[in-house]
Image (tube, rainbow, N blue to C red):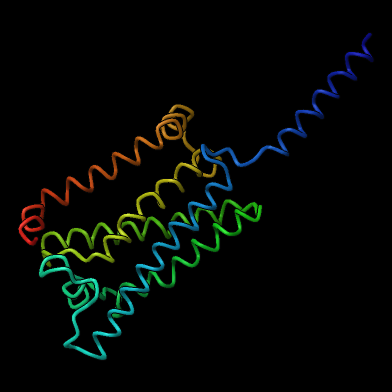
Length: 219
């Protein structure tokens, strides 16, 4: 009787171990969806950054040229490109996106191919994204209160940076790469979509309070 019980316990343990090994990344959307998210967001960010970098090059070659992303005097890329904030490190800011977003895209492709990335890689990617989001906040502030103009291509990058950052946080919390208490983990993962929407609403409210009148008057 003891031998039978021991055998059953051993068998159950082996089955449990197999299930744990076969389990996918514990995210609310799955590793493949995370990969697709990174590819799409990284691709959009790269295209917008490259387009702005190209406009900067064309403006250098032909100073009198009107940028293709200039809709009116308020919604224009020219004001941002010509400002000191447009080249914080001594070169145009879009070059940062041209260099960084391919890393995001490559990470997404690796996930889609089934690659399991180590914790240090995810934390490094998250740290880079946090720095990118901090830069976005700074550029939003200067656009609203110093330049007082909106750059369409810049706004595309602003739009994709928030979900890029947020879903890395969600993935890190759920997988254990970011160690938090069980209650906070459940709150973040269970409400990830609501928090994403709140972030967008807050950004839109900030924009409208800061320059909403100028934006409406420009059309």
